[in-house]
Amino acid sequence: MEWLILLALLALVVLVILTKQRGLTDEFSYEKNESLFSPAERSFFGVLSQAAEGQAVVFGKVRVADIICPSKGMGRSNWQKAFNRISSKHFDYVICSPETLSVLAAIELDDKSHSKGKRQDRDRFLESACSAAGLPLHRFKAAATYNISQVRGALFDPPDDASEEPSLPETPQAEVEERQVCPKCSAPLIKKVARKGEHEGAEFLACSAFPKCRYIAKSIA
Image (cartoon, rainbow, N blue to C red; front, side):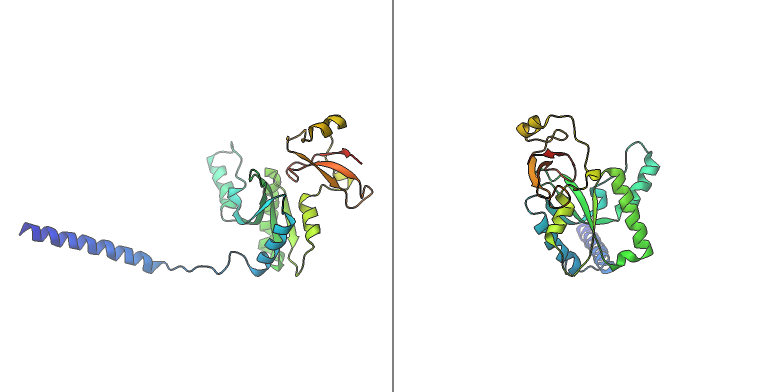
């Protein structure tokens, strides 16, 4: 008789568990999105992939909190508040070093939604946060067509304006060329050609970790 009671109790427990599980699936319903990107974002992803070929790896829809984080030492309460401001946001794209996957820059594609007040507040906050973290943030306007060379230049070419060039270290030029590494971060130096400005056509050495490192050696032409 006792075994019948135990069997009935066991059946009752199983029934309760199954009912709860069914209730959970009934309460929440999900469906798969058709695409990770909107059509405009997918189009620009293809442009970015071509522009970054050989120099960076492109990732899309990356959580901001996976790229930057609140500074230490601000206290638990303030740290949590700062984290909450970035926890639900994401970058449209992030480019990383192909060798180490270290983050080189974040990229935002600005469509017409960025003209709205709340979106502009969000954009200003992201720019401020990235600036504080030392993370380059590039913005591109959504368009029907893009010039891949211009996109590549905006991401990877050092500025031609002398006023924007980083100060050069006191390392002798001969030593820099012999070492072929950046004296600031030890990344390989690569030869580049200025595409515009008064130095158009001149060859120079630049750090391959640009834009994370903006070291430029003197002209080698």
